[in-house]
Amino acid sequence: MNASKRSSVSARKTRRPSGRPLPGWLAFVACLSALVLGLVGPDASAQAADDAPPAESAAPPPAPPPGGYKSGLYPMPNDAETPLAFMPPGSAATPVPSEEIYPPQTITIRFNHKKHTKDLKQTCKSCHAAAFTSDKVADRLMPKAEQCDACHDVDHSDLHDVKAGTDANGQCVFCHIGDKAGEKGSVAPMVLPNANLVFTHKKHLDRNIQCGQCHGQVGELELATRDQLPRMAGCFSCHNMSGAAQGQAKGACTTCHTARNDGRMITSFTTGNLVPPQWMHNAAHTPDFIERHKSVAANDSAFCGSCHTTNECTDCHDGRVRPRKVHPNDWLSIHAQSARQDNPRCASCHQAQTFCGDCHRRVGVARDTGSGNRLTGRRFHPPAAEFTTAPRGPNHHAWEAMRNLNACVSCHTERDCATCHATKGLSGGHGVNPHPIGFRDKCGAAFARNPRPCLVCHQSNDPFVRACQ
Image (cartoon, rainbow, N blue to C red; front, side, top):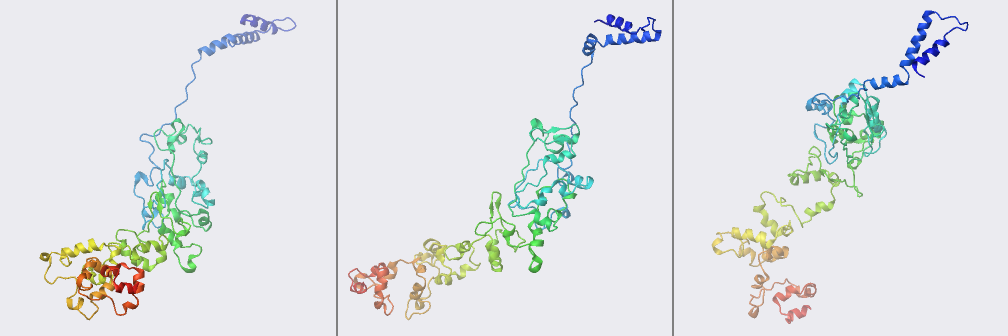
């Protein structure tokens, strides 16, 4: 039905049943209605839709300010130095946390703690509620991303499809670092390795030890970094007490440090080896510790035993291996007496034929030193009246040989001894008997233990040897 037909029908319907014509104003309204119906009909509606202007495209997301966001990138604005009063207790003794205890982190968000705590009146528990029930280091104490949605115009309910809002604080780049943060649905991950400690937040919080007593004044900072992690010197304010004051804050190393099955601390980590700090018993393992460790060990051997076994001590202190700095400064002038006593045992570190012999040749006291190199009065052995002539005394070579034969053989061979201590005649000796009085009665045991020394001077068919077989 076209518009003219609908108009006539409408006009007919408006007539009174009595057949009298309608008033003029009512007829005008009827005509106007018919005209409107014609305009909004199917053809007119289609024409209006074709002529309507296109809908406006969605507005682009708010861009960050020129130069990007500046706050929340460092602990202090513009990366200024953090005042010591804001740092964790013990930072004066240990300004930087140990990488062996707290491995390096990678923080890829900006966050202003001061704004949240001062301006927005948020507490530590508002974001870190998990700390109040945490009983191990491996617990994740960072807030979940959905928790930010309560204030920020963003939806983190599905981390694989995060929906940014229209406000600036709901854009990915508002919190995540990087110009392209959020592009293709990805942001740089944060890396927060577990601390190499045994620690429970719950026990400390249950004893009314508040966050600032370990982490410092985080509420005065913008970004909290690993610099706000506890220092051992601060822990010692509770864990180094004595007597009744100690309470349940035990001071044993393994109370907080990880340990092996034998009770010793684990000291080797991917970031390095854990060693004591300088302020702890003066036990820092600096290059001069080889000189200082004796006093540290003497004062508290159990302290050293937290990391070291007795085997590590005996590696140097059993006479077989010794550090090169074991001798005092005047050792060169007094070593002769100790060498004769073999205390400390020279051969535990030195090769007699090379180390000792080379030095003695240079100074002209070795037996095989050229006569031109021998200085007047320079000799290794005492005068002949003491060293070779009877009767035997404390410096006689017989006693020296029995006391420390290694000192003799460092220069002499058995042939040197046989020039005197061999039978006359074919043996070419002077016939000086090397055996002590009563040796014949016990020579059998000596021959059975090691016959080689006997055969240096005696033939195998020697009647003296037969008597000892």
